[in-house]
Amino acid sequence: MQANGRMPHLCHPVIQYFKNQDQRTIEIHAPEPGAWVNVLPPLKQEEFQQLSDNLEIPLDFLSDSLDIDERSRYEIDDNVRLIVIKTPAENNSFNDSDAFYITIPICIILTHNQIVTVNSFENAAIKKFFNTFQNRKPDNRKLMVLKVFEKVVVNFMDFLKEINHRRNLLEQKLYDSNSNEDLLELVRIQKSLVYFVTALRSNELLMMKLERTNFLSLNEEERDILNDLIVDNSQALEMANIYTNILSSTLDAFASIISNNQNVVLKRLTYVTIALQIPVLVASIYGMNVPLPGQESHYAFYIPVLLSVSLGLWLAWYFVRKKTSR
Figure 1 (cartoon, rainbow, N blue to C red):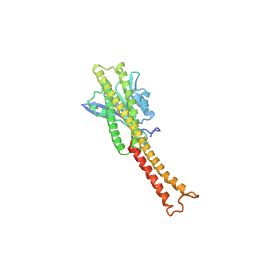
Figure 2 (spheres, helix red, strand yellow):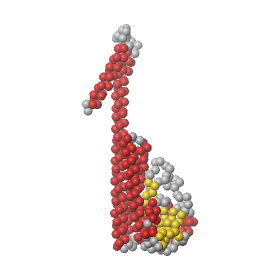
Figure 3 (tube, rainbow, N blue to C red):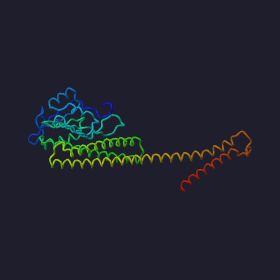
Figure 4 (spheres, rainbow, N blue to C red):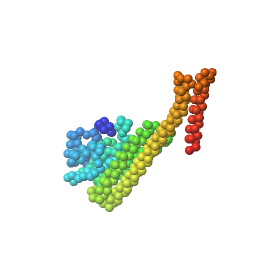
C-alpha cells in the first residue's frame, strides 16, 4: 500500500489492446492502427520505456498517470496529445480516518494511430467505456475522447448519489443516538466531497479550455457534444457543492446539539450539587465539637436530619419551579 494510505496498486501489470470488428469488441495481442490501448499499473520503468518506444509516446506522458494528485490538463508533444482528467474511485485504504472516495487521474493519449488510456487504478469510468466500445469507431479518436469524458461525468453523478444516500442513512442514525462512529463517518464523507468538488472544478476548466482552444480540432457536432458535457459537469459540481453545504450544516447542527445537551447535563449536576450542599452544611454545623442548641434532647439526631431533608426538598422544588416558569 502507498505511504499515504490510499488505494493499493493492482497485483499484476495489464496492457490491453482492443479493436472493433463487425460491431464486436475483440482483444488483440499487439497494437494496430485504430486500436484502443488500455494500460493498468503497476508497470516497471522498463515496461514503460518499451510501451513508449512501441507506441511512440513521450515517456513522461505514461509516468504522469501514476501521480494520484496529477491535475486535469492537456499537453502536446511531437504531435502526440495528452489529456488528463480526474475520475472518482473508492478508497480501499485501511485507515479509518481517510475519505470513502478519492479522485484519480485518467491519462488519454492520442498517438499517430491509436487512442491510449492509462489508469492509476481500476475505475468505473473505463469499465463503462469498455461496455459501450463495440458501438464506437476507434478511427474517430476525438469522439472517443468525448465518450470517455461522458463516462467520467456519469461516474461522478453515480458516486454523488451514493454519497447522498449514505449521508441520509447516517443522519437518521444520529437522530436516534449521537454516536461518535457515525459522526466520524460523516467526516469521511465530507472529505470525499472535498475531493469531488476540487476534481470537478478542475475538469470543468479543462473542458472549457478544450472548447476555447479547440485542442482536439472538433467539428460542429463534436463541439456541441463537448458543450453538453460541460453543462453536465457543471451540474455534477453544483450537486457536490450542495451536498457539501448540507453536510457542513448538518455537522454544525449536531455539534450545537451536543454542546446544548452537555450544558443541560452540567446545569442539572449543578442543581444536584447545590441541593446536596445544604444537608452537608447542616450536618457539618451539628457535627462541631461545641455546645449546640437542643443537644441534650432525645431528638438531637432527628432535628438536623429533618432540617437537612426539608431544606434539600425545598431547593429541589425551587429549581423545578424556576425551570417550568420559563
